[in-house]
Length: 162
Image (cartoon, rainbow, N blue to C red; front, side, top):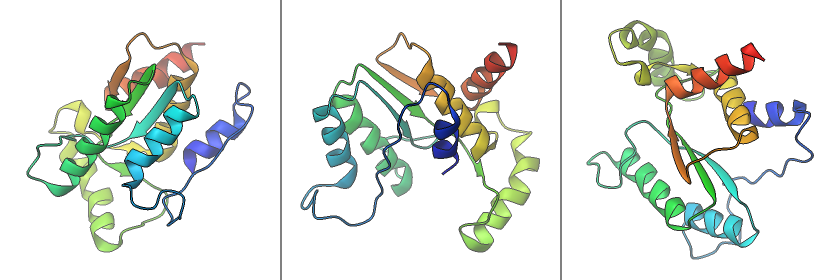
């Protein structure tokens, strides 16, 4: 929702189409992520941004990271002209969405993250959304780019200099 608000406010954005993960008959029998990517490719989408997770790896022993890595692999196999993979660590949201685990993460992680490499730092969803919009507006040179916390900060800083 933070990204949609940013896009709607962007002068260069003419329209926003929102697709959700709610059940639909349209993609019956196919995993949603793969079907979504194929539909985008068939519709002529040239640049796709995907929010995944730090540590995404299709061979991970962690189920969540394995799923995220598998989705990344599926998107890459379709050879979009440009694919931007955003891999944030912890997302800070204005509302707690996942109960006490979310509360613990959002209140304790800022202290722990200071001891970790910068790519593991938390990012506010509003800042991530702004970085995603800024990235979409620039011309990328790589067919696949992986963006971590530091890359998002660089995008935000470059916009401040304009």
